[in-house]
Image (cartoon, rainbow, N blue to C red; front, side, top):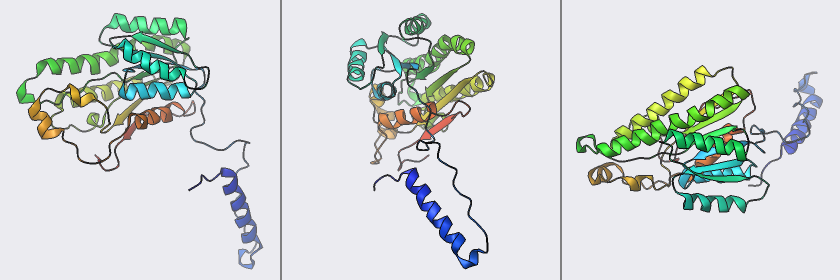
Length: 294
């Protein structure tokens, strides 16, 4: 079906209104007219992101790479951060092929290392400008049963998902507060709303991210800063390949047969939150495969 223009809707409404007012049963009544168009098509997502500066962690693959590409298409200057420089350069090469004059920067970074994260922020501000947007995409997920005591995987989950988010927020927050603007987006999970068996520690880490974001949102109200969590369900990434607990994988990681989300679907949710007008904040977005509701 072809898209329907707002102009066509306005024209059709005016015809209906005029016919109604001419009808003898109308008895002088009228239909309120649609407001006059401002000269451009009406859109909820009207806020331009052109020339803003963003840091995207976990940008070497999956959701992070998709977010980096989506921001680049919007004219955002993007610092791509992750541990794998070769993969980051591949993502950057894709950005360079996109139209527009947006700049990009590759900064190999381990988000669990506070000094590396501070260096990421300093280099971004030096080469691209003050940071307007942080998108925390770095994360790990291990399917494991608590009784199987995969404690190294527990620790890695806490280090990346919890400590990593803290390090990144701590590095950008002072500058955002000083400038009176900024948007912090963290890729959480539907596991931050509901605990899934086989993902107890992962779910706990995402509950942490949700609590952290809620607290930050409350504390920064009135400062010009927005805080958003995006909570995707099952996404077609390689996250589950990290798991070594065969029992947990067998019990809880088998595909349902439903079509899962693509990373680009999650990136679209991020853009939706970022495009809102200055006075409007999207605090949480839950995005699920249609046939896997929670």
